[in-house]
Image 1 (cartoon, rainbow, N blue to C red):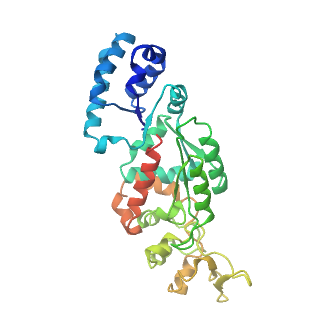
Image 2: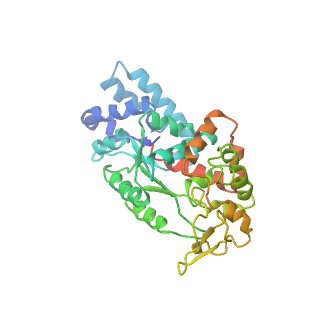
Image 3: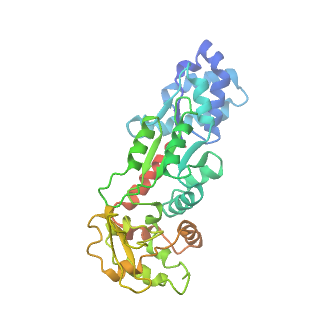
Length: 342
């Protein structure tokens, strides 16, 4: 939730009378736990006078709320001023509109990406983000792909007066760990317009799905290698190879002359694979048979499978450890970015 400070000068004398209606709307946000009140214990006398003057019947309730907020401020590190929205007389009306409006999470695909985010939130103890969506304090906007997501994030940010409560979460589409893609550039451009962006370190959302979830995916057709065989081949990958593998589509496709592709065809059906040149030497040490087995990938319905598996139980935070060091730290950082605008 947003942390909001009301300077006590807005509560005193004539300013307090002029701003009373708007100030009380702000305090209602705090009472509803939509946002957090930032207030110093030294200001309690001014708050008490203001409340007794303008809402005498609610003064006790609001004063207890202010006292609780002031004590939280005492224990906040370094005064807890980071990320605080400090309203002013000339910005008050616009600030209230910004705080009334639901925060916006912009993603490439509102269905699949939210399924991934919800599943990860449940694993990492970030259910407050799910609650915010269910309570309509957080909206999820379908960007219609990476280009659309970045553009729509900027459009959404323009709807806010001063506090741009918009987060953009997009895939990196990276082919190797050092790959800086156009997605990073689009996110940087969105940030300059007030958007808070998170570009995934891994290639796509689906790369964050643990192996235990993939093991639960049913076999599709007799012509395709079993999911168990694909998973065994996937387990031969290093963490970096797995992070940049196309989980949905695999290494499918015939080698194309002059297209900068690396591939091999043995003359037998089902044994073609194609490794895009943008991967560089990332997969050079992988056996041909594993690349052949993984030519089809794991399909496009992985986010739904992930969420179902988490909801059923049997998948835990520890299953994310197999994805490599720093993964949980990155995902928690993503959730902190989302929280920062709620």
